[in-house]
Length: 363
Ligand SMILES: *[C@@H]1O[C@H](CO)[C@@H](O)[C@H](O)[C@H]1NC(C)=O
Ligand SMILES: *[C@@H]1O[C@H](CO)[C@@H](O)[C@H](O)[C@H]1NC(C)=O
Ligand SMILES: *[C@@H]1O[C@H](CO)[C@@H](O)[C@H](O)[C@H]1NC(C)=O
Image (tube, rainbow, N blue to C red; front, side, top):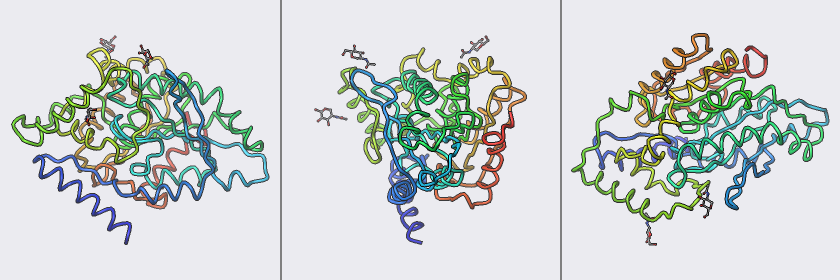
C-alpha cells in the first residue's frame, strides 16, 4: 500500500509538471522505487565495483553482484550471467539505477543463482553516442577476458559460465542491450536479450509521427534555454559516467520537452552510426548466431512509442527472418513493469521463454 502510494504520488507529480508544461506529456511511472531497489540489492547481494576501462584518468566501472546465497554455498557452482544496462535516455542514471530497475530484474539473478553485472558508461551530452557504444564494446571485451578471474579470486567455488549470458535493460538500457547483440555479438556471445521499451534509435520513422514541440510555448522556450546554457558551459573535455536520479533530471526533461534529444548524440555521422539501420547492417554477419529477443512495451508509453518498438521488431525481422522474438505488449506507461516481481504471470512467462535460450542452449 505504502509502495503504491509513493508510486502514485511520484507519477502524478511528474505528470502534473509535464502536463502544465505541455499538452503532450512524457509520462513515466518509475520515480518510485529508490528505497526499495537499494534495500533489495543490499539485502540479497555482495557487490564489487571493478574498472573495465580508463579514459583520461577516469575509471569506468562495472558493478559485479553475487547473490549472498550463491556465495554462501559450499558446492562448486557454474553461475550464469545477467548483464544489466541502466536507462535514463543515455543522459542520466547510474548502474543499477534504483529509480529505474524493475523489481523482477533485481530478483532474476537470485532466483537463478546468477552473477549480476551492470556497467557505467559515458553519458551524453559530454560524450556522443558512438563514445557511449565504444564503452559498451569495451565492457563486453572485459567481461569475457576478466570477469571469471574477478569472480574466482573473491569466490573460489564459483565458475562464471560465459556460455549462459542474458542481457537486460530498461529504456535506453534496452537500446544498449539490443545494440550489444546487433553490433558486438561476436565477442558478447549473448544467448538472450530482454529489452524493456527500448526504441530510442534516432532513425525510427515513428519519431516523425510525434507532434512537434510548439516553439512559442513558454516551457519549450525555457527547455531550450536550459539546454543552450548546459551545452554552452561544456569545454569539450568533460567526462560524465554517473548521474544518479534526480541529478540532471531538469536537463533530461528539457531534452524531451524541446524535442532536441538527438542533438546530444553527436553530429550527423555519429547519429547515423548509433542508429538501427547501421546496427542491423552490422548484424547481418551474425546470421543465426543472434540471441532470442524478449521485448516489452506499454501501450500508453509516452516516452518510447509503441509504434517505435514495433518498427524496431519489423526491421529486425526484415533483416533476420528467422530471429526468435517474444513481444509482450501490456496496458501501461513507461516503466509499467517496474513494480512487478517474478511472480507476475506475464513476467514469469517471459522469463521461462528467455531461459530456453539463456540456460538451455536453444540457438
Ligand atoms: C582526453 O584528453 C585530451 C587532452 O585534454 C583531449 O584532447 C581528448 O579529447 C580527451 N579524450 C576524451 C575521450 O575525452
Ligand atoms: C553554467 O555555468 C554557470 C557559471 O559557472 C553556472 O552558474 C550555471 O549553473 C551553469 N549552468 C548549467 C546549466 O550547468
Ligand atoms: C545498410 O546497408 C545498405 C545496403 O548495403 C545501405 O544501402 C545502407 O546505406 C546501410 N545503412 C546504414 C545506416 O549504414
